[in-house]
Image 1 (spheres, rainbow, N blue to C red):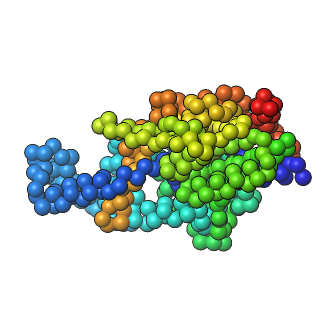
Image 2: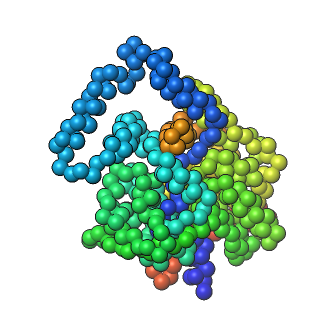
Image 3: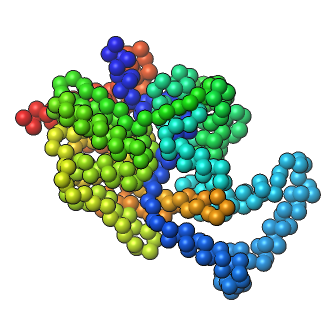
Length: 420
């Protein structure tokens, strides 16, 4: 019974899965109004109306490049051994290649269908296998962060940090996560075949997973022993704010003496969502600020009216990214809680989605973000106050023991005792 309860607590850090829900996983979105869109549209109009001379303006696309692209297209049409390459395929390839050239894995092009999938996934309901995924920068492939409890991914025995090498025979190397997710999604009742690399296994694992309707909660709440409350946040979406507020209210109603917030394997999400959650916890002051390449700064602050007044522990790991790191950085800078686990992912940059006229879109990195004390953690992450390496062997055994959560309880008990 206790083991089942621990599993239900959802240690998505250790969890399994690979689904389609965490498309925003590594992206904290800042909505900059329509200024970027207006600029792009104005530039497009000026170019189409020949108001901009490509020969004099230094623009990338000039007559020479246009001629070269036409030559390459002709070579493909004449010599390529298969006939299944359409002009649309080539056009999309040009757009993807242009954005890929900046060398940023978070700056990508979306077709109209792909951007629609992205928006649908933020609603938390889709047809897939049920999992959170992220980019594994070591292999340049998609990896599993964690499962959604009760989903096909969990039932199939997938695990955190499983690397997706192939989806239905398609190699995922250097493929945008959104495209990988699109391959995984499908009609309810159909099956997707995954080729998995798992550390410690002598060979690839081949797993067939049935697709089902998945409704992904982003917050789970549980009262633990000794008056300790546990709230897990699996992703920061629009719905997360109300879900967290409800869980926090329920914890207070249950007369909690201290709180554990678990953002292990949380890939991030909406900047607005994490800012709203921080406003329920932090004292008056800075939450996070961003700066773009022009030095323009945007600040997000807290009025301190709802500052959390009980002992607090935040669980983090190497898959806690982006918005999760904003929360972790603020808690650590204000010293209002103790961080337990391992160093976070290290994503200190922000993306903006720019919708284009034809229904396609671009997600582009627009700025860096900084913690209240001025730290930019991109590439380095946030170190825990109490380091605890996750014991996967014990967790995946019949014992189902989560040593990081156990340490978080120990730390919180001490804080509660000191708070008396």
